[in-house]
Length: 533
Image 1: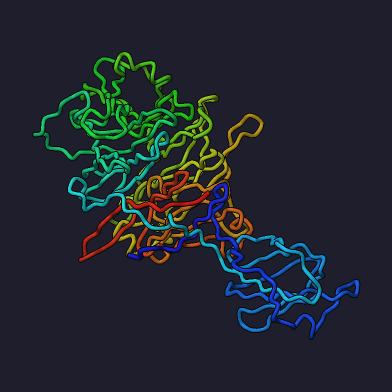
Image 2 (image 1 turned 30 degrees about the vertical axis):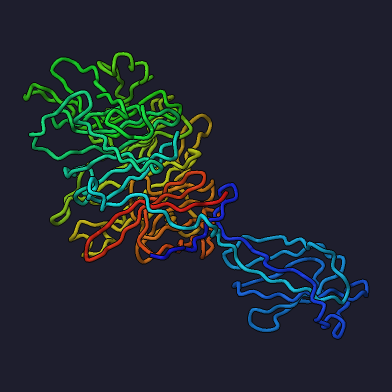
């Protein structure tokens, strides 16, 4: 791996782009070209002459005081300006435009040397830091769903899978970990050790996953099957950020108040934006085997979840919000509006050849009006992830290419090609609306993307960081405005050497997942690189 990797990481209020670097501007007393070949400005006075050296592509100069300009040879330019000029505008390919103010006054017939390069954001922080990898003896699996704790950026969370993810029906082992990157301490969160000490003789796969952090407090929730192999929500508080011992967290099983002869199975917890309410997906099971009832997972909510802390989250009342005859999964609350929650809603499964193809929708539920808005209807061999933007104005979602346009070899292996789309969420006349974003030719923002949970990082309202197959997993910066304007170069691939995925941003670091393949093995690592703002 490269010891130092040049990546475009200049952040100005999270503006993710390269900028001009003026490495030299000074008088050249030995160069007499300004006197030997004078050019006069509009007032008849001789101009100053600037000679420019640069290897930047498509370099251009603009300004009302420019009298004459041109190219001397490859990488060498000349500019004649009035001596009253104070600045010129610089533009080049894939670089933010710059107004260069001359640091000294210009003089008639004098030659000035100007050298320009690109500042890539590489600083002393540009060295890649190894955090943790699947070679760690306690991990030994595929790392994904990487997140950073909102209240403490020294703590990350991730899942480890021991078999390929095959969607909501997966029954393969999933383990949940917290890691303190400063203390280098790894802590496994186990549902089987929360509230109920499950026997080690249980013959089922562990499935501890779908962690969600509280927006401000030292709490998180997840779903696990540690109690009698039954999907439940667990809520945990961090007592010791160092994660140095087994009592670092205090966890509780969220025990719902069920009717007699009923029991709840729960998945996909999500805190409302104000942190008060907990949304999730709930299925009821009747103890009476002859009973007829809705067996689907449906959207549910616990109001004021932390009012139940004193009673250790037992016998909690809850509300069923949207009771349909098909499953509702991947519950995710808006980060800004406590009344909005998005989810995937399965309608049916279509049998095609020897494979099952799922038909499902991406919906938003509004608790203010008890109404549902559908963003898009989707299908695929499995359901794919989606993500709210940090300002809550957009939902970015992964959409499989239609079956009719899917390669036959992909169909044979039950694989979809997935594209990234997004929709604007807003209120119009008090009514919630969701509008799929498009430019003049397409609704697809980015083609051929890995559809991973928490697979997008938001730099600002116009730029997002996501992985694309180009031709392998590569982190890319996507400029939404350039996409809207249909510019050809609306995204840039970052210059990492290996496969990269799952970006997560803090104020001064970019965390991501890297894949390497030594000796036909797959090694998955969490890494970070320093960034500037």
